[in-house]
Image (tube, rainbow, N blue to C red; front, side, top):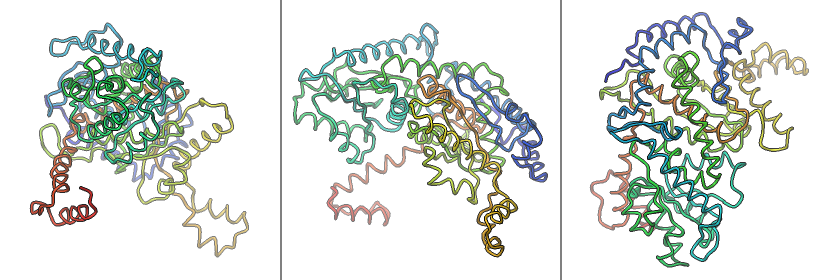
Length: 551
């Protein structure tokens, strides 16, 4: 099936002319507010518990009309419906893309290759729930008879980023008897730091690897196994190790009982997998009711994405504004500024979701794309970010759109803190939009009694151009349902952008080459033989590592 892409759509030259007209008129964001007293109402929307203010973007109603025309010409609705229907839209791997099915309610049949996957999904969820209740109720105990107090998830990529982000974000909902830890990096310092915090008698390890062969995960898992066996016997492993995998035989060989293996499916991409059994550490950290609420929040956003017209569709509007900023205003990155400390891992999570999905330069037909695709995603929590990199956002030579994220209600009882936090969040988006003119700077410094000569010297340094775009997303509070909806919002935003760019957002071949080369280099590090097949730089680095006795 061949779809029209952005660069070949009829709307593409119209949008190019439109942006040129806006430049000629020097139409700035602040002037758009001057022209429309109700701009905030006209350019904001809410759905599934998420409020989006997109009024501080350099867009007009005409911009949105042209972008929605482009989306229809790119058959976004058709591609969306195909994804939900289980069509194998991941063409390079011949797979369906059905992470949305993981959060659908029970008894909503979804037939894929002749199988009702809804039944399969809820069978796994039921097993997860029963397991969580055993751990929390104390029915499951370790080899020495003690209850489990610590969970260590061993995974990498989507098997780590999603569960870790959600568990940290929803710490206020955590089960009081469970502490969760996450190990992903093959760097031994990661595992070592966690093992120093836990007791083998009361620790449960979750090994998350679909194939049970992921190199980094299995090295960490085997090292954790060795650590455990210093105190216990092989026969005790099943009480302390479970797996999320489809390779039951490999897990059994490792020492994990078949009944303690939780499976998932090839239509679940890694970066979309937290909704599956990969979310077991989330359910253990929070309790299964909260995990179900997370799924329900995501499903609410799924319904909105499926049913709302493009002009009133949150994921679609975020995607189209992102395309406008990327392809017509030439903004190369997006900064995520979450004004909530518990969302500290959210920018890293979005990095994988967006950059692994849309970091592509080849379209579905194997041809080079004609426009820029996925932006660089980066960020940190506010207000820390303000004292780190906001200088660049305000006065840097490149313009970086920002997604501000905040909650109206905190999960603490320190109201003065939350007022200051929200004041900073709202002020930063306003400052990025308005800037400060040379005339304003002169007036301020004159009022302070600064010498005129000094004013002339400093005015350019204190001037802000403004006209820097941002979105603001507001949640009533950060709870399982609202977080689920927000994650799904970004998932669908990324998918829509891929639909428009004509790329496959659901494969990740670019990560494979480094893995293959690492295998050969690791063999060279273990050996003392010459390395004639390596370039001189790599050979030199290997020699230095050998000299340091890395092998």
